[in-house]
Length: 570
Ligand SMILES: O=C(O)c1cc(C(=O)O)c2c(n1)C(=O)C(=O)c1cc(C(=O)O)[nH]c1-2
Image 1 (cartoon, rainbow, N blue to C red):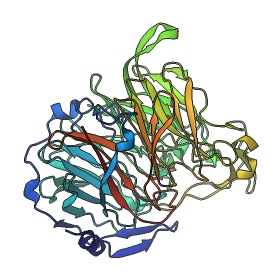
Image 2 (cartoon, rainbow, N blue to C red):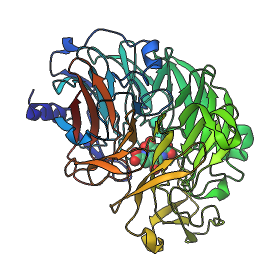
Image 3 (cartoon, rainbow, N blue to C red):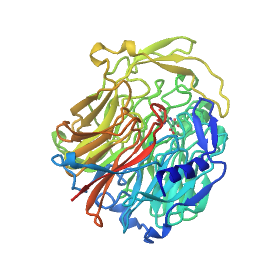
């Protein structure tokens, strides 16, 4: 099928264009549909087993879950592309897969002859792609109801795979399971009522036949949760609210928020989940929710079997800054912490505060807090007032530090690569009545670039390398851009780190030194997604894929959405 034909299929699916209550366009299909664009018999009929999933981080021939492995390292062992030869990396396919909506996802690649890629983007489109040929095999569109409420665009960040199925979260707070050979729907489960403000934007994960998925809607006064579904049937196995009722004051628990809107990290040995948890509700008016607002803005550890809450590490107690702690947690087994003479399993997170926190995976105790990635100003210092108009300038603003953008961890360099944003914002507080399904912020944020110290003007976005054992910020590269960085990173076994910018540049760094070793201009569209990679023994090439297009909170640039597949022969 030609690019034009491919686009025509997509256009037919995107016949509903709506404005949500915050002005975002949602392009939704009126009906669910599956189209077969090329021969679907090309998809090898080999189920994805638990063993394959458990080994996905070590297997260069695949990328089987959102973060590359359960530990969310975003690291490939494929080793064809090196700092020395990266200049020879070539663009092999440029596919018009997008629909003019959010492009934040990471595709999966299932090994085989040919390998099969599963790519998704907003609002709830999934495609099976033959990445050798650059052909779409099937294309599925979920019919997003026209009354969804979304704080930050019609995002979809990826899918999960188990045996013969592909799973996607839907914007109306559900999960749909598709037959991965045909694209046909197998089951759909609603996890919460979208009319109350719940939605779902992340990639779920599956382990041992159980699918784990969270909750979004933290800007609508919902009560956050995480839930486990049977991957075969969609039946709910357990459901846990993130915030404990007994630790909240009065009725405020009902609008607690504390949503879990990014993918869970799984510790297979302990059978535990480590979840990023967002802001309390309402975002800025803390007066209606006295106390520390446990468990918001931090990492929540759950028993993956039962959903029982095991520990919580909070980064911003009684948050009034919108310091969601959203990005995926990096789990590191046996991290040597030389200066303490300890070896520990740890969970690492860089939150919107600009610090990275290394916590003990067993207990949730803080082991190390890093040097700040960016400038901090007045953080936690001001006492919020609810009087209309009272305000204060603070840094980092609500964009972080680090927002949801997934970092990469290299077991070779033992560094974690985060995006960090240097931005000043002003917070305004005001009293708002809660109304179901309506924004419940209790104030607003405004950019306050004037307040940025001179030395940072023109420098909003950076990539930083943090040593999780010492907290040292080993290097930092400022991006020449007037806006944030909105996608994730990827590390390779050969010491490279890839990350995209809102200027449309895909950059490769020497992961050890932070030196830029390659840059590719992806055209007039931002990169808001995260790169991934695999090696195909059939073609003897290493591939790198990234989605191109605007996204979410930023919605910048032209909507020239594409999927780029780069390759290099071994
Ligand atoms: O509290 C929530 O439930 C929630 C959900 C989401 C989302 O699902 O995309 C975002 C946020 N909060 C948020 O605070 C935020 O800054 C944000 C940015 C984006 C994005 O995709 O660019 N999503 C979200």
